[in-house]
Amino acid sequence: MPRIGEFDVRQIFEYPDDELNTDAFINAASSIVDSVCLDSGYSEEKLTLIETWLTAHLVAIKHQIPSSQSVGGEVSESYQYTLSLNLNSTMYGQQAMLIDTDGNLAALNKKMKEGTFTGSLSASWLGIASNEGVPYV
Image (cartoon, rainbow, N blue to C red):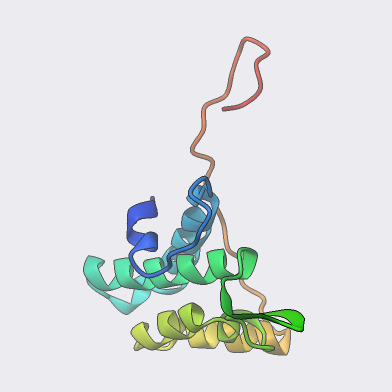
């Protein structure tokens, strides 16, 4: 179960889309934190910090925030994103790895970058099934 809500993410990542639903990003980050960080014996406060920064990383990949814009002869825009893979690609992912002082996320990042990740990550369905022929909620 996630430790954070949308408000927590917005404290460090001010994305302009007020209608952006962060539930999927929060659930994914929570699942990753539960899968790779729980054995470190971190406090709930530290797990919450890691989950918050990891959620911001996932949102930043999907919804890039401009870092600079210019209009003068030529229109251009740059984004807060580096040409790197996995958690290194945003400052939020880098911060999540920094907070995870046991190196769990860094190890996962390295395995994914090398293509040697053989573990599994899981997510849980939090909706309810309908018996009335109505789609899942």
